[in-house]
Length: 381
Image (cartoon, rainbow, N blue to C red; front, side):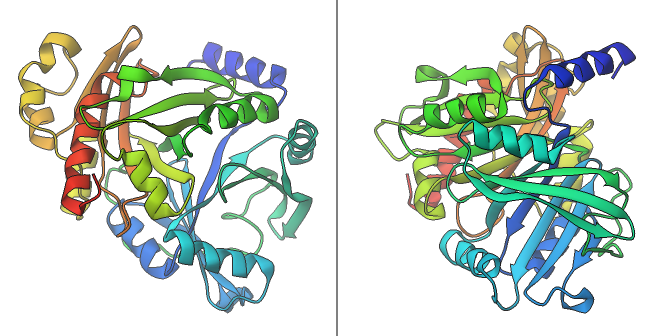
């Protein structure tokens, strides 16, 4: 990023009624955090950096913090529920399976952010409070969003520890790959019920000052059998991007309908992870056992005619089943994993951007047909 671009982002942040620095962490509630941490370390190439559990005073939960570049995942499991928080996490796993409970956002001032959000209609979950240890002070607050998901607002400008007070530095579970698979969270996609998308888009406009980036309706996201609608909201610097999906009326059950049924309501559907070398990333993740959606060879037969040249030869794209999309600003390369747990709910996207700030509109039909093939295997189409 150039100095001029950084200055422009800083100016936009200062003018923003709800300034953010970026995604702080994606927090999962899981049935077995130790095993989840091992999976994301070995299969996704993430590095274990911090831990909280009985050994250092957390009697109710165990949490593992993994990072890859600026992307941070936290996996928390309940050992023995003793408080309202513990009971909530245990019930969340029982109802939803492994899933995301918190899309934590780093902000320059958690108190101001919380005050603005609540003043503009957000439901406050935790008023601002401080956590301290020998590494400094973190200020936290939390508001509710769709389903049982929350946004924790994190001001860690006065903190130098591995994650939060209460966590200790941890030794990596496995050695990370020589070249990391991804370096940042690109966007986080939420699924909501039919008729609720615009309500939550308006929520982000009003409560966080986010604006619309993209909108996909009608034939944009439709196949012969299923359809959905999607709108993308983002902060002023475009560092935090939240696409929001809802099902649309169609002949058969859409991927959103399937998610809502098996997740038990609205929630986080997928996380897009930014990579600067999607070919190496896919090769490494496949070798580690990660399963990706398949794309028919016919997709690649005419790819060059509409997508143009990319830095990756078509033969390699075909081999690895990587998708391409191009718009007026450039192009992107992307690929999607299959669900990473037994329920057909949470999955991941790997994305490599070359100018384009889109979301792969040209690939929607191919992608959703691939998802439908998986739905049919599960008997859920």
